[in-house]
Image 1 (cartoon, rainbow over the protein chains, first blue to last red):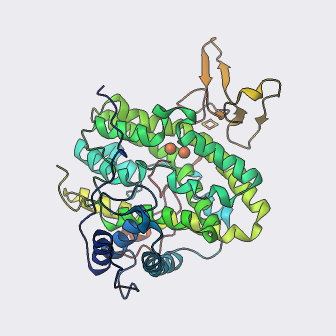
Image 2: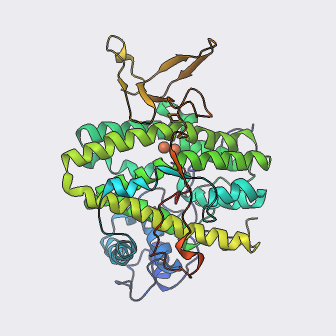
Image 3: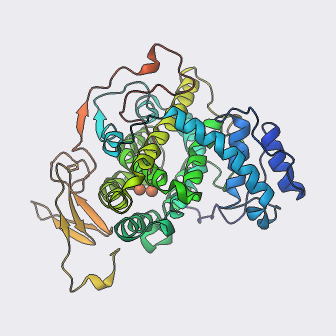
Length: 335
Length: 96
Ligand code: FES
Ligand SMILES: [Fe+2]
Ligand SMILES: [Fe+2]
């Protein structure tokens, strides 16, 4: 195996704009001048322009961009613009999700397994019909999250206490390699990408990622950065942990079938086992602890679970539509 | 807690869960019927009690109830806004 090259050793270049809002944000970061836009206008809250603008603004809190002053992270004009983009995004998420606010009901649907493929699941598709090029596209798109896996969720830690905090930190500790650098899940993902001959540099596939991918990552940043959305962040985390184990089993099988290497399979094998534990701990102690301490957050937790389903559904629809018509799900070719 | 040396001297906690796995504070060794030794260094291990797991002895969520997928709401209609989802199964493909 070649020596490990840290994907985050460098920050990525700014992406190409996708409309006036993302154009403003990227120009402001490039020139250091204040953005002129102050409102989202009638931009589609799930569309490329708004989602990319939001993504770039959030990224200042993670890895930043090459040749962009790190102080822009706390630039009041950019933060004001970010807020005006978050509001329509959040409103669209609330509009697209149920309103009964019952956590147990929201989780119940995720705690059963479909007997077969209902035709709307990416992992089922990849398990049965995935070819190497599908898996490479999927891995490239998911890299926007997995190269910073579990980072957005770390922001919730100072907002929790007691049982919820102890449990959340324990799960995060596992995500961050349980004290061993080589086991950090983000690193296991970089190893997977290497096995699939993908570029592992952080942010490399941002330009290739459609809005539906950006939205799934923006959701975590939105929930993570707002204390007022701590319940939604916990709900989001639970939704992904609960569904990850069986989905990871299918992806491990898909990777094996197309002949991907051992590192590619290891990422998903680890998630089959780890997330069977994480699910239990998150439901029992993170959600249970938070509900015991702050019962008024129940509708927010349910909202986080449902918003995750909403955006994952949209993404699955997009990916499957492209792949079933034998075309790329990316905005441009992979290589 | 997580793999901490201070655990020595303190009893390991085992949590019984309804239909799911047994949760055991790690690190833990499990001895199989045939004497095989399995080790988990995780902060908590989930030990399968349903005997359906394919990652013996660890739970892999195979204990879950299996349901026939309901017809998906967008099978008939164009659901570009994603708002009328009514099913609840397996909607998330991401790993965590
Ligand atoms: S208890 Fe979970 S797979 Fe058996
Ligand atoms: Fe996890
Ligand atoms: Fe993980």
